[in-house]
Amino acid sequence: MNHPVIFFDGVCNLCNGAVRTVIKLDSKRHFRFSSLQSEFAKRTLQPFHINTTNSDSIILLENNHIYQKSEALFRIIKKLKWINFLNVFSRIPFKVSNLIYDFIAKNRYNLFGKKENCPLPDRNLDWLFLG
Image 1 (cartoon, rainbow, N blue to C red):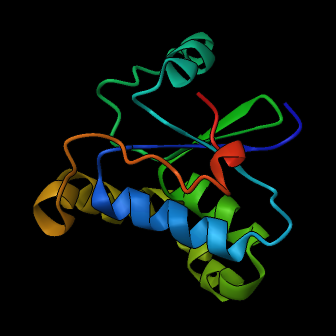
Image 2 (image 1 turned 180 degrees about the vertical axis):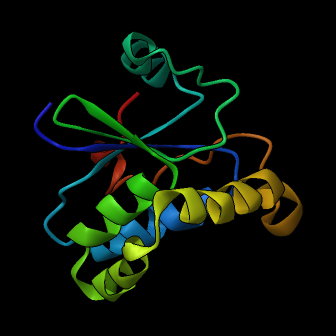
């Protein structure tokens, strides 16, 4: 795979909003996307022993390496020109930033809501989505 893939919870409103933001800011079309609920995600992440049905983390697959939680988030932000100022937070130790990440992830449906199904991407952008 030539492009890093962002795996996300396809029914989570926060996650879908984050994906839309990344797409908007990723003018070079660096990233590809897949919902964790897709067969592509299950097949691709299985060798890394990631259970996609119980994952509450954003997952970045880049150069055959898996990044999760805040580490994935900061690696994604680093590639996005307009919000890379947020990388200042990457200096916080991952133990601390993951505590914050875990709190938000655990409460994401209560705070931001949940869809019944993963929404389909815009037809002009569906080529960015795998699976």
